[in-house]
Length: 268
Image (cartoon, rainbow, N blue to C red; front, side, top):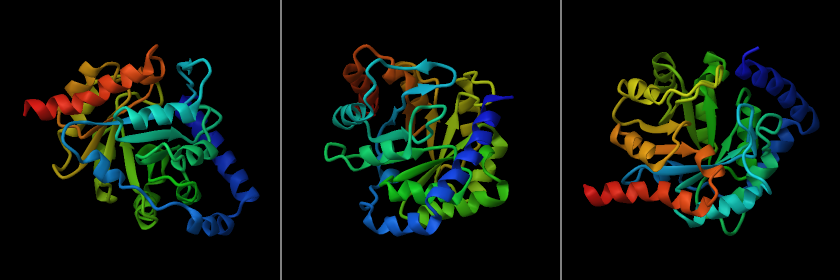
């Protein structure tokens, strides 16, 4: 079974169990207690290419990224050293995350930038969960969502005061995302079926998007030079995980990626 299929099969069981343990009405009641959303769209829509720095313990293809993994410490480093937003994995089985980790980071006094709930969303329940724990944005993968529900899912995120980063792999998927009302589109260089990385994916697919769409280059950005290339292709933001998480000096690595935006601004 391809990896994405396995993840989604597990996700259907996981969400069903969450709904059994905490019905939607109970989750919705928690929304009033959540902190006000931070402006995720505006955080990405700045001069240069914005860094969305990722918090995750492991991945199916790479295993565990760091010894003595501390998600809150990572988020504080990202916030302090130049990231413009933070992506936090909410999937536990395959990536070692959880809604409780999103909540911990999103409500920490030392984290001042928007936080995205990164999950394999298949049900509106997960969008309510994201806002209830304080998330400012949610990631949605087009190929994981029933086509008839994509517009509804994006609309729900907006209704709750969040933004949706809508992830695509093909030209056809980006067209569906645009038609469904996506304001921010991510193009993943890593195919979640095969986990192969193709850095040319972004260039090919982005060229067909409306100029007003904010775009994010995801996965496979291994160095600041890759970030510069993504910026030159017109991307507004980059989502970087592994290159930060595996760095011996993570503070220095975050700063190097984050300063690419300032280099571009200075050179214009």
